[in-house]
Image (cartoon, rainbow, N blue to C red; front, side, top):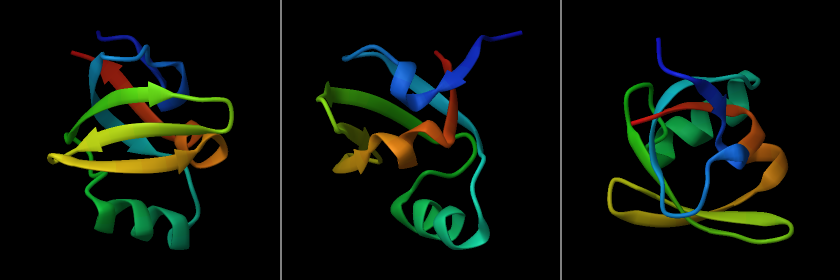
Length: 76
């Protein structure tokens, strides 16, 4: 069974697969619209103090750490 962790714990340059989103309906819908669906591949491009820059479906997004904590991923 793969190790599941919050997106904020993924090291820079590593790719993972979205396992689940532990958020309310509004935030979950917004993240799904951005491409963070179960099974999507996501890579942490850069981790800064208050935000993560991630790549999903070839598009870079800046997510606050609070939002990124709700995205659970498994390392691929």
